[in-house]
Length: 241
Ligand code: ADP
Ligand code: MG
Picture (spheres, rainbow, N blue to C red):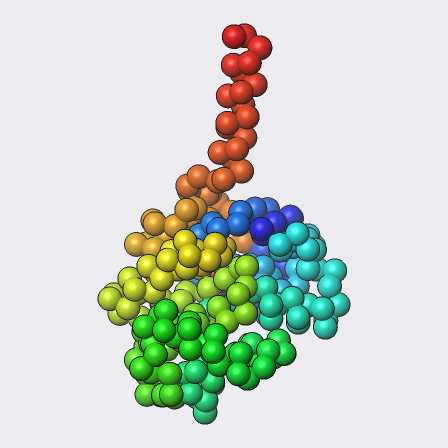
């Protein structure tokens, strides 16, 4: 689903990413952890086509996005990717419902259809009562769940989140984390979540540790590795049996 090959990125003389190779399968929930300044946000932005690498390729859903032209890229991002940031980034002058609708309207969905789908999502997230409130009238947890609904409105294959629970209290944090897994189970989406939260990184399928612009280690099973292991077993047992 996500395939990064030899990603490097510098800002001026500072090399922030020093050759990242990473594969993430469909339906995986992966966390990215590491010290501040390690390059996590830069990596997520490149994965999300919001920034371009100096070298390397980014395949998303089988498409080499580094080769897409601006317009195609904007459409791809709008339809295939969902973003959740640490600070919700909802538009203050619009209601929760309107905020959720915006990516659908950009995609060309009719207002009627967008509103219907947004209402379904808000219902699913137990936010129906808050639909007509503006962000300033919502709690932190509610705003973050609205931001998740907005990320989901175009049924993206991949959700990228940068410290999504960083500004939430522990109860809201737990609810938001649980929501990611519920969504994966229900819709099969792939989640990549940059986080400082240990409780979250411990329950994700894999945890990628980034340090000084490199992958320091990876904790947890990789689906591809599991397949390889299964094949190895076959290879070993078949001839000698
Ligand atoms: P993390 O998310 O792991 O804290 P970042 O990816 O945000 O790390 O940043 C990695 C390094 O790159 C930091 O030293 C940061 O100051 C620098 N950096 C990030 N974005 C830019 C930019 N647009 N211009 C210059 N330096 C940047
Ligand atoms: Mg960051």
